[in-house]
Image (cartoon, rainbow, N blue to C red):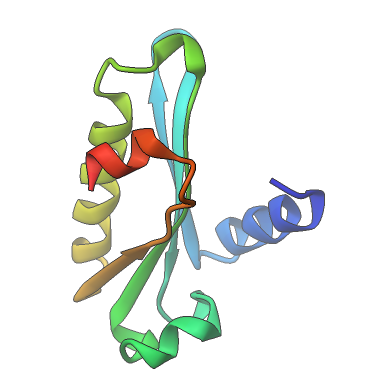
Length: 105
């Protein structure tokens, strides 16, 4: 993640336009950033009305916890929170080289 992107995500969380979903076991071992509605990237408006969507901007799991279902659990929890926030659709992007995320989708 780039420094500018991280700062933007923190600002969205402070403004109540995003949530950080954490996986913890005495330390943070994974997280997902869930962005709501009009705060979603404008490029997503080609797929749906931004006012009804959520966007999972990042989903990261500590490599030491890889393969333990943490990413899948974070993904499910983020989708659940999006629906509770009155979002009808949830979008996530995956980089081609991120094979672990491909297995969760």
